[in-house]
Image (cartoon, rainbow, N blue to C red; front, top):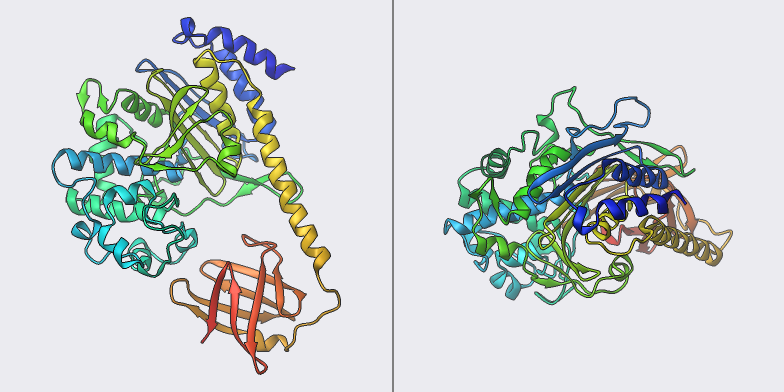
Length: 491
C-alpha cells in the first residue's frame, strides 16, 4: 500500500504543470521503496529537467557491511553506458571531417577483418556502432580475460557470424573496442585522453575516470554486491578495469552524469557552446538497427511499439513517448541512463547490486510520472519477470536431473582426462586433478567438476555453475572437451 501512496503523491508533484518543482520527499519515498523491494544496499540518482539538475542524491550504503553512505560523488563503473561516450567522440571527429559514419573500417583500422570476406570488405563504422556486423558478443574474450584489447581484435576474423551481415541485431562490445581504436587514430590521442579532453573536461565531469588504476586508495567508490545461494546480499569483488576500454571502462558519479544528461538534453551543447553538430548529434539518436520485439525484449518492454539501436543508444517508445536509454552492468553494479528529448527530462540511476532490475523499474516509474501517465507498479512487474526466469531455470535443471542416468561412472580413470586443450580463438584450457576430483582452469576461471553421467561432468561452483562439460574421444583416449559451448581439442 505504501508504494501506491508514494506514486499518488509523486503523480501530483510531477504532473506536467509541476514538473520543474520536484518534490524531493516524494522521490525519496519511491527510491526507498525500490531499494527495499529489490534489497539493494545503495544507489545514486540524478534527475535533469529543463537544463537544470533538479535532484541529485545518494541513498543507502556504499557497502553492506560498512556505514559510509552513497553520495552524489560516489563513483560507479558505467559498464556499457560507456558506449555512448565513444560514439559521441566519433561524432565530434565526423564534424571535423576526420571520419564518416559509412567509412569502411579497414580504411581506418588496417588489419581489422571479419570471418566473412564480403562482410569484412564492407563493414563500416556505422555497422560497428549499431551492432549489425552479425558477430555475436563473445563476451568471454574480454570478461575477466587475460587478453588485452588489441589481442581480442586480432581474433575477430575467426569469430563466425550468427546473422547475415547487416541482417540482424547482435550486441557486441568488441566492435566498440574497434571503434575506440579508430577514434584514437583519427583523433591523434589515446581514447582515454580524448575522453578527458573532448568530453569530461568541457562538460565539467570532474570525477570521470577511464580505469580503476587511476583511483586513489580512499576514493569515494561504491562496492559491488550479489545475492548468494540463500538469497542474502553479500559483497562481490570489484571488476578490475585496468585497461581503458571504449566499450565499458568509464567510472563516474551521479553528479558527473547530471552534466552528461544536460549535454544530451541540450542536443550536443554545453552552456550554449556546441560540441557536436546538430546533424551528427541527430545521427547518434537515429534508429540504425531493429531490435526484434520478441522473447526477453518483448517481456521487458510491454508498452513499446518499436525498439531499435542507434549509435550507442537504445531508441524506443514507451506509452507514446520517445525514450533514449542505455544500461550498463558489471560485477556487482548496475547503471541506467535515460532521457526523453521531447519532454526535456532525463534520469541516471546507479546501484550496487548485481543483475537487479531496480534501475528499469524506477526509470519507468519516473517516466510515467514526469509525462503525466497513469502509475503502474513497475517494481512488481519486473520482479515477476525475474521470478519467472528463475523458476524456468530451476525447472530446466530439475528436468535435466530427472533425465540423468543413475549409477554411471566415467569411462576412463580421472587422470586420463587431465591435460591441456586448445581452441584457435579461446586459447588454452587445462584440466587438472586434485584430491580425486577434476577441475578446469581457463582464462581467469577455476571450475571444479563433479561427475554427472558417463563422460559428462557438472561445474559445481563459480561463474559457470550448473553448466555441463562433456569429454569426447575414441579408442580409449580423450581428444576434446566441450566447455562453455566451445570445443577445445587436446594438444
